[in-house]
Amino acid sequence: MDWIATLLQGLLLGGVYALFAIGLSLVFGVMRLVNIAHGDMIVLAGFVSFAVVEVLGLGPLLSLAIVLPVFFAFGYVLQLAVLNRTLGDDLLPPMIVTFGLAIVIQNGLLEGFSADSRKLSLGEVETASIALAPDVAVGVYPLIIFATAIVTILALQALFYGTRIGREFRATSDDPEAARLMGINTKRVFAVATGIALVVIGIAGVLMAIRTTFDPLSGPVRLLFAFEAVIIGGLGNIWGTLLGGVTLGLAQAFGGAIDPQFQVMAGHLVFLAILIIRPRGFFPKVAH
Amino acid sequence: MSTIETQALTAHYGDFQALFGLDVTLKAGETTAIIGANGAGKSTFMKAITGLIDTQPDMILIDGQPAGGRDAHTTISDGVAMVPEGRRLFASLSVEENLLIGTHANRKGPWTLDRVYDVFPVLKERHRLPGTSLSGGQQQMVAIGRALLSNPTTLLCDEISLGLAPVIIEDLYRTIADLRQEGLSIVIVEQDIARAVSVADQVYCFMEGRVSLSGAAQDLALDDIRNAYFGI
Image (cartoon, rainbow over all chains, first blue to last red; front, side, top):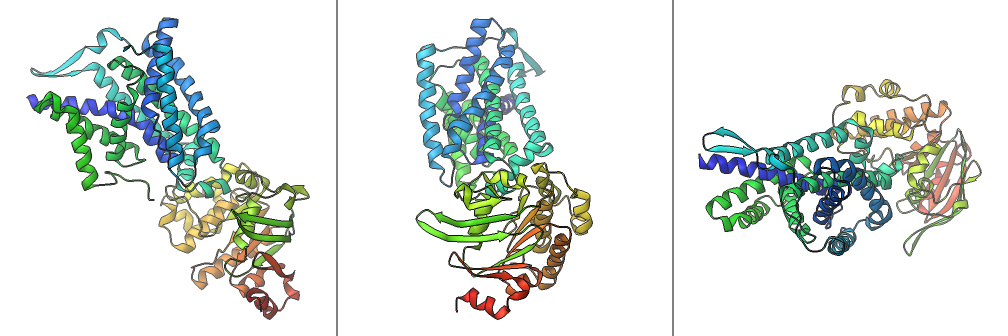
């Protein structure tokens, strides 16, 4: 029964990576922007939640009521004031600017919160588990994260395919110039998209901060896993991102079962293998 | 109803100058044909009108008001809608969603989704298919329907006959003629001289970024237009 436990563990870990990756996938899908600061924004959300918990005495989940609107506004303003100016035919300028933003966030957090590791606590839920069979149990909290990833994707799906702004997202993603001719204010569309991406990042950051310890410099590792999930799944495809996250989670879980030191390496190797076999991921959406 | 005027319109792509002082009047309720060879400046002219290329404010006047250099997305809310060259349908949107994009301009008027389906019944049958899965002629219908759903006063048609079968072009031009009857101002950019002149009130020939010939369609001989086109 060991391998079933490993399978479940990998699957649930995949939910974590998917949740990390959705915001990255969304921003790339709508505006071809590769956000190098993505991981640091996740960590920033963890720290904002940490500060809200410390100052206001709220629980970590209640802190979402403050973190999410703040992050939406942050994303909206960041896009309008900074990132829109970097967009064009060249993918490089937005990468360089978000790389700089990553450094600013890391150092800002070091100044504000020191290099100490932090963690948010949710109490018993964190360690609770459900026994499925004598030797097989799943953690309640990993299950919550996995369910959150799925609900987030379903919500984004409903937004993209069932609303007016969703139609504008897709039209702008297909052909920004034609979208402008049809009266779509693409700069505002991008700002809303980044705002929504930062809401997802906020959710990911707070859930991460409950799951593991984090410190101001732990963003780049999150970015790496998110990147791998997005690329395995196919750039810009959100369901592909879930599959990418699960693939990565399974690879790490089985790698870890072989040898605990092999866990992270196994994920990278599977990523590499998929890049060789399917360079554009499982479900490439972007045609150019 | 609105009249669009350009005054000494110039436009550049970086160091390259594409338009050299164009004076063009697109009269309200009339159909204007703009004719010229590749590189004559026809598409650049359209881009300037729609704001895709930056120009000085007073180089373009809509009903006398400066309208040059505005954001492209505001053009359509002023009633200037574009049927772009190559149709430019949105690949991830269905036929119906492509049409509905026209309604995002939030302009009231006679055009509704049902009316577009009345004019192009084949689109109703295929409304769930991806826009880009249709034949070229049907895609052109979607592009025209999409523009009409913004309830424009001026319809800019850029090379709508390019790559289509003659019988389909015939149909499209009949639709254009019907739209003129409803009082829409129409601008037709074409390489097919005879086709464009047959539906036009006014004709402008462009050559190398300048107007080489202009006048009322009935006053111009096709031979003169051909000469202006080729620069003979």
